[in-house]
Image (cartoon, rainbow, N blue to C red; front, side, top):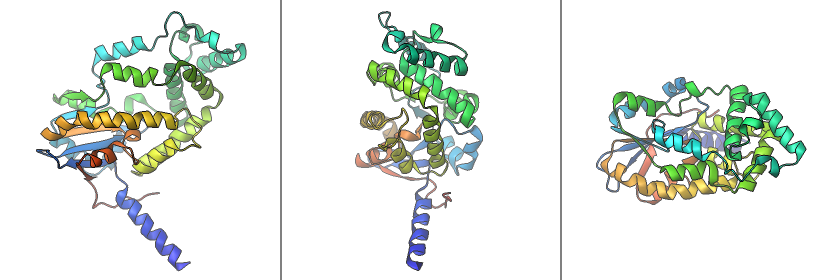
Length: 296
């Protein structure tokens, strides 16, 4: 019994030391250090104050790197156009009457719009709209106070350039076309039928995020028993994209002083961006490695 207690304490301390959200990237051909910060849309801006040295290292950087620049209005407009279905496809033809009615009722209750107005949108777009509304109602998600895009906004105010890792066409693919249309149809129906599964996963991911457990975050999302619309196949697409991102990050990392802020989902795990950067020869280590972070 005593040995088990000691083992638990040692494992807890090891987890506490590894529990981090902010990482330093150096080595290879880097002229100066860069930093990677894991984000989560459900965290409020105030949460950023709890991450030691976060604003200090941001101040050292002269550019921000992210998945997509929120101030690229031309790209955003292109994305909105890409969310539309081709004229030849009508959603109502892909569902039974009862299924389509269920989706229509769910959209009216959450978005205050029925399928008469939303039926021209791709199912993946509707799924994301519906998920966001679930998170607002059940987990207090507030887009205006979300910490996810905070540093992009601050960079714009300070005149720091913001560079996206995805090209517009790639962002469209990831948002709307990475899954075939028939699978998007199934996922839209699935989230409407079992909304609690989405909320359960997001709540679990948020807990891992707040504790800085990025590996656990990635494993939770990619586990076979995850019954939400975020599937293992989605994670495989993200991991494959990480290989491209490592190459695109190379010039920024060579120059140094880059502040890279990306969703936590892309960073942890054996195939996450942090691991892939290490495999490429970079030195990646927690900024706050000497600060104990309690894992609840």
